[in-house]
Image (cartoon, rainbow, N blue to C red; front, side, top):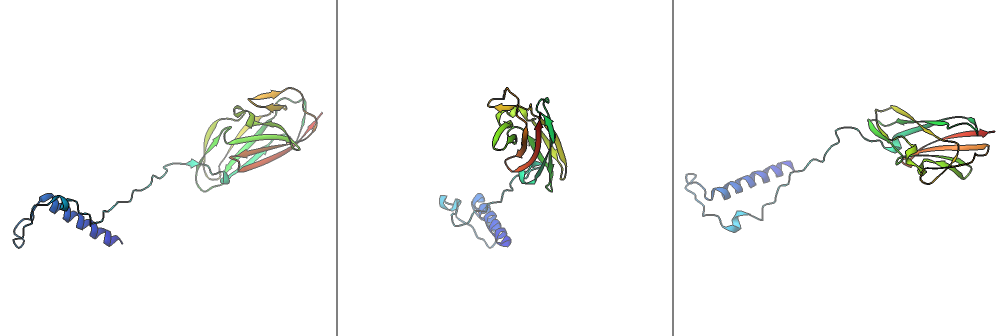
Length: 190
């Protein structure tokens, strides 16, 4: 296949040289060619050779694959309903074989708190509750960040609903790119 491509390139070079010079020089057996015609200037029976173009290769880390990000969530096991703004410590670890860029933002992370099926609070109501940064993570490296929950219900457009929550079991779930998840069960007490 490569040899055929080389022959085609050589043939094209010879044809182009003849077309450009207009005539063959006498001396190689006294042969001369007639001036080229318009039809012979661009022969259609000779296949064109197209050089393959290499696709651009990333020169640095690319976005982390959510399937290769392991999440953990830490927080209180038990907390009083009257406590002020507990923080969840979230850790994301690159489990892949290459460095990647972890985009920490409300667009990629969602932290929800539920009691049973009752949605209590979620960062989906307010992207500002999630830090906004990019971190380059080497293979096996982790980054930790925190999200504060005010122990209240959330509403659309960053609203915090007044009124204390009732004692009971609550579950915090963090999700990255709707793929990687981690959960933390906690007990709210009087």
